[in-house]
View 1 (spheres, rainbow over the protein chains, first blue to last red):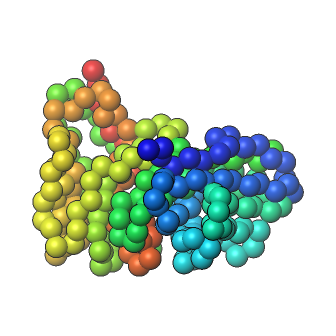
View 2 (view 1 turned 90 degrees about the vertical axis):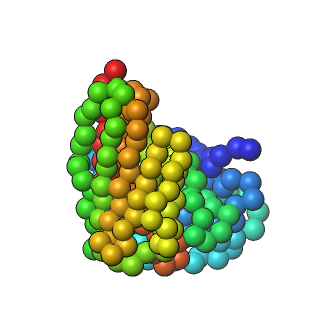
Length: 113
Length: 110
């Protein structure tokens, strides 16, 4: 049973470009969470999605950031017009339901030039 | 801030010794979880303890929870070099949102 798969592992973008981060949850998991981790910091919650629905996006910046989890395919975290401050590791986690342990992917390291 | 404190921030011990890590939190919780993160990797779930539980064991791990003091501890017995990692105490609030601290850096010397 494959774990949470994130791709790409590393992504380099220039300021102003768009970044798309993908997350395929574990088989049987319908709950997906995105977190951001700055160097030497813990993870910060961004958004919680179930299939086709955003449940909680209170940790996501209102501008330039969006997330989706379509009926088919992976969850996508999209960052438009990236800036240097977006450089971070972005982790996706999935769980089979609320209040269940979350299983994490290895993250996507985003670097903005 | 909903984050509590983790103590100590860093811990260095000899292989075979026990490691005790503590955390406190500020809000009411549904459960509390401990995760491990090796450098450059994602997080690995270690153990979950529910708010109505006081102690839980998993292999060499022992977790306690004191809801009256809003605190938890993680004990790793007979530590190994492979236990070297950052450890996070994470509590779950509304909408299963996990709140992370900065973590505790554990170094186990061979």
